[in-house]
Image 1 (tube, helix red, strand yellow):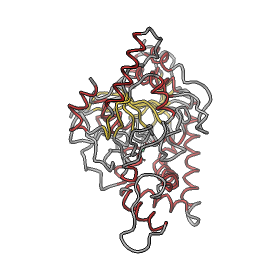
Image 2 (tube, protein in one colour):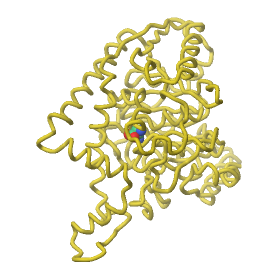
Image 3 (cartoon, helix red, strand yellow):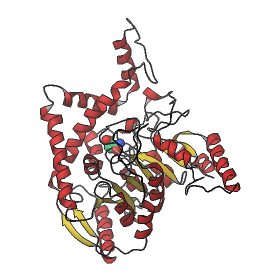
Length: 451
Ligand code: GLN
């Protein structure tokens, strides 16, 4: 049914870069056979899923939205993909994204944008717009995204779906094509909070192949979602972040947010305003740390090890000239912009002024969170400042594009978990999102309050 739905709507939505009907049907048939044999099956066995194209899948193309990886077929599975397969979940295909997960609209994909199913002239958010759109358009019941600065939560907000960025280290990064290694985290894109909890329990838990993976199993999320569905939050302390929701936020986004805060109060939550003053510098710090790490991570695309190789059109074929020709042809404008920004921020003469300062701001943000979580159990804000904007509207203005991430970035800088849940629509009928943040390793709170 999902493959038929993809066939019917994906020419318009373009959520997928690549679909895999035959292996998905074979995986589904294997689950049917096991069920007929009376096997005890995992909760999501037979439920199909879409996977963001930055996650490597053995034998299936993985491009990260970049021309430089256009013909690359990975020889191995990411740990989270191994876990999906072991849980009996057929993989429908790979979803579209901004090149190397750099962007907030999916317009920086080398393979054309994804469109928002709610209004095809608008963006589905980014960088994981393909995963969010696939779920919103009922092309897949579940999807995997990655969130380095908001790329799961912001697309969820503008497509009316649920998106979770787990605690850093909670889901293995083994087999994710790295954008910024200290910020990247994979997580669920779904239509309900319970679905996200079920999926998080499948993909989460310790992985010895990822040196930053936290110890322990991923459990308690489904129970927390069921607990939350009882709609009793008596005694829960909720902090509204003063710095996230004022200037620059669309008034209808703010109004929908305020209405949901009142709803939390009605079911017993105590609401207070908290201040996190360093958040005002979060965007600036992020856009130095991320390009710095990205410029290093992208150095491996040299025209020799993976994917595209372009030889210089004239003159000698030296290693350096092949690298220059390949990277010049293979990377898009946004990737080039960030490589240049990042190498500049890391250069000897500017390191202290830029990268060093940004790392200090990162520490201040972590301290703001620590102080806030000493007072409250969860923090809340609008997920994104506006509803979905029109395709092309911010493409020529990187600063305007970066401002979409203002509410989601602090969580990545601190490594804490966050969820975006659907929060009604604006006057034009476009979805808005409600963000909940919890202390590191307290992901279960997101599922309880979110549900
Ligand atoms: N929009 C942010 C950026 O462009 C977030 C990216 C992400 O989470 N992958 O960096």
